[in-house]
Structure formats: structure tokens, C-alpha cells
Amino acid sequence: MGDQQKLDNEFAFIRDVSSLFRNYRAGQTLVPVGDDAAVYSPGKGMGQVVTVDTMVEGVHFKRETMSCWQIGYKALAANLSDIAAMGGKPAYFIISIAIPQDWTYTELLDIYKGMQALADRFKVDLLGGDTVSTPDHLVITITAIGEVEEEVRLLRSQAQAGHVVFVTGPLGHAAAGLDLLLHGYTADREQKVWQLLLDAHQQPLPHVDQGRILARFAKAHTISLNDVSDGLASEANEIAAASGVDVVIRKEQLPVSDVLLSYARQRGVDPYTWVLGGGEDFVLVGTAQAEVVGRIRQAFRDQGFAFYPIGYTSEGTGRVWLETDKTKKCLAPAGYNHFRQKRD
Ligand SMILES: Nc1ncnc2c1ncn2[C@@H]1O[C@H](COP(=O)(O)OP(=O)(O)OP(=O)(O)O)[C@@H](O)[C@H]1O
Ligand SMILES: Cc1ncc(C[n+]2csc(CCOP(=O)(O)O)c2C)c(N)n1
Ligand SMILES: [Mg+2]
Ligand SMILES: [Mg+2]
Ligand SMILES: [Mg+2]
Image (spheres, helix red, strand yellow):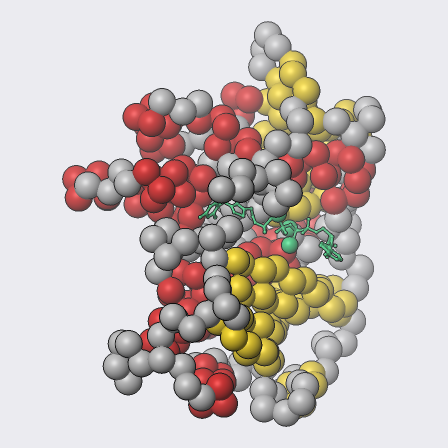
């Protein structure tokens, strides 16, 4: 099929893209893609975790910031990240795609190949979708379905005073990567150094395995959890507000990488604007009882995962503080807000 081949048959397109996905859950899927709706049978003793996220051209990506493959990959990653934030094991996904006329067949297939890579990585099956045309701007909406043990509750509302606050990966990389893409710091010499930042923005790995470790501990301990889509300041405020405790983030403990520091210095940007407010890092942020944190940390280490204690919780009114040895400032829920972006 030629590169410029336009989409002229909705049904052939659906057949082609569906065939990219394996049937990892054949035993559980009673009616797969191809009928009016799909039917699956939930696992015994497992609750169903359901989430939906949308990616819009011009808002979540531009043609120049993401390849087609990366657009598909990231659309699924954002959803799996929400399943991870509930401690769930992803199982299925459903796609709705609104396609403008100027996208070629090959480009669209590449979007699905991006999803395919992640679907294979976590063994999730496509259950169906919807295909429509739209006058402009591609829109992809994915609903992901996972399973979590019925007794596991990794909620935003479960922080208690005396918890340790943690994150499961570096912060600010995705925002720095986006900055790099938008401001063209892409000379060959620099590419390798900054690749970490570009990867964080273009193909984040959702912390599903980390979420599963936390789910195991959540059977006997109280843990709150959220994923970082809008930015740490925003997500920490969600936990603080939902739990009615104050969250104190120790600035020195925040995982700020040398690569991020060096990129921020070159750009003349305060790295903490990205670390606290950048968003799309898709790491997990949570709180856990102090007595279990050592064991959680060890379990993460055993599987080669990062785990950073970044602060503590205290009795309060649901606010977030950024603390150093000398200062303590209230941290507003700054971060990405769809109703507060500049519109041009
Ligand atoms: N338009 C909507 N209608 C109904 N419920 C919504 C709507 N938008 C969000 N929600 C619900 O509000 C809650 C919080 O949603 P939110 O989108 O903030 O979570 P998130 O997916 O973790 O964040 P992000 O969208 O930044 O990835 C969820 O329970 C979500 O299902
Ligand atoms: C071209 C371009 N401009 C800006 C951004 C940044 N951005 C968009 S949505 C979002 C929050 C997460 O989305 P949601 O809340 O919908 O889950 C962020 C940080 C981007 N990715 N691409
Ligand atoms: Mg969402
Ligand atoms: Mg989330
Ligand atoms: Mg958001």
C-alpha cells in the first residue's frame, strides 16, 4: 500500500487494524472484535478497573512533536497509566478514532502499530472501537479495562497523617522533552544526551508493574496513589484534598536528573517548573504508612524499579507544601489544566 494511499474503506481499515492485535485473553473473551459489541468474562474475585483518556491533535501532540507510532503508543500508555494508578492489571482496550481526510492509510496503521507494541508488552487485547471522519484534527479516545483484586483500594483519598510520600520515577523529563521538540534543540550532537527527555515525552512506559507491587502491599496496608498526568503539584493536591491531610514535599528529595538540570540550564528555565508542573511523566505518586515503606522500597529494588521518598503527610486541611530546611511554601495545584491553556 503506497504512502499516500487515502482511506477509502472504513471496513477494510477496521479489519486491518484489528488483525494487528493478538488474542492473549482468548479464554476470557467470549465475543471478540467483529460484532455489535464485545463480551468478556471477568476474573473471579477481581474487580473491573475502567478508565478513558483522549488525545487531541494540537492539544496532546502535533505532527512535528510525535510520530504516528508514538501517537498510538502514548494514547494507550496514558490509559494503562490510570489502570496502574489503581494497582490494576490491564486486560482490554477499546479505541475510538476520529480521522481527518489528510491522514494516509500508512500513517493510521502506524498509529495502531504503536498501540500494538504496548499491547504486546502488557498482554492487553483490543476489544473493539469506533471509526469516524472529522473535518480537522485527529482525536483518539481509548477506554482501558483492567482487573484488580477486590480487596485492593489504592485511592487518592487514602493518605493519612504520618505517611511517607513517594514517586516511582523521575519528574519533569516529559515536559523538558516537549520543550526540546517545540524549540528545536535537535542538532545531532545533542540528540543522544537529550534522548532520555524525548523518550519520556514521546513514549513513556506506564508503571503497571510498579502498580502491581503496590497492590500487593495495599492488601494489608493503607496506600494512596495517583499517576502524574497533569504534574506533581496538581496530583499531590488531588491526594491532599481527597484525603483531608496536608502533603509536604521536601524539595531536596525530588528526583531531578542531571540531564534535566543541564537542559533547563541551557534553556534558562527553572527546572522545578517542569518537575512540579510539567505533567505527562506517567510515574506514580502516592503515600504509604512509614512502617511499610522500607519493604516497598526493597520490593521495587528487587525488580529494578526506582522508588523515591519525597516527603511526608501531616494533619491539615488538604493543602500541599514545598519544604526546604529554611522555607515552607504552599504549593498550588499548578499543572496542566485544559481550561486554562493559552489559546491562539
Ligand atoms: N467529562 C466527564 N464526565 C464524567 N466524568 C468525568 C469527566 N471527566 C473526568 N471524569 C471523571 O473524573 C475523575 C477524575 O478525572 P481526571 O481526568 O482528572 O483523572 P485522570 O485520568 O487521572 O487525569 P488525566 O485526564 O489528566 O489523565 C475520574 O473519575 C473521571 O472518570
Ligand atoms: C503539542 C503539545 N502541547 C502541550 C502538551 C502538554 N500537555 C498536553 S495535555 C497535558 C496533560 C495531560 O493530558 P490529560 O490531562 O488530557 O490527560 C500536557 C502536559 C503536549 N503534550 N503537546
Ligand atoms: Mg483521564
Ligand atoms: Mg490519572
Ligand atoms: Mg489532565
